[in-house]
Length: 273
Image 1 (tube, rainbow, N blue to C red):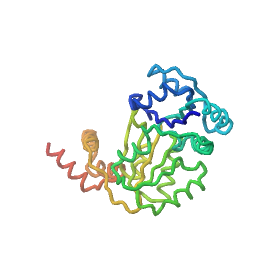
Image 2: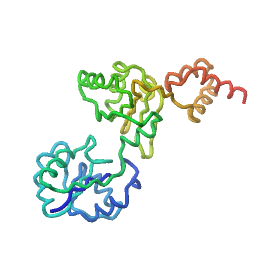
Image 3: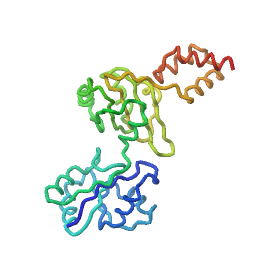
């Protein structure tokens, strides 16, 4: 009998894969992949030639018996679209069935967009809640957010670009204008981390593109966004473009959650040269 390996794969940058993951993918008899095209690209990058079977949200129950039969004859690696399989990706049913059959389940840890976004957010990391993707329907989405209204730690949410505006609007309506980090395309070429408040994020991502991970401040958090060189550069740009101190500091206060007084001090420093 083989083992089921849960292999974490890069969330963007192909270099973010462990040597152990490469070895396991090279040695198993079968790779069960959420997106076979994406997985073939990864395997090709490391010159791994392997049999691949699709295993995704729409066929995970139909493919269950086939993968379990394969495990009786050898090792199988489960990989998701990106990151750690089983985290808002197919995997739970297969893992549960394998455990029920007495098949060893072995984690091969690595990249996770949840942890990556959390540690880069600038919010406390001692305790957090993970919601995965918010429901598509407005009423269900609202109820999901109401359920975490009193959570003291950060709340991590995944979101697709075409639903980001709806998600941010719901967060603003249900939870108020909290501090938030909106992480876009983590580890990829166009990686971006917006740190500010929810209303600012809503204005900033008016035409969302890419994959998003939201880290929302919990109810008990008092963390404030940091004044970064990027914000100073934006103030300098607005000044060069002819904006008044009131216009520039007001705009950035709304977008970032920073206080106008703090921004005005930077404005005066820029003005004095």
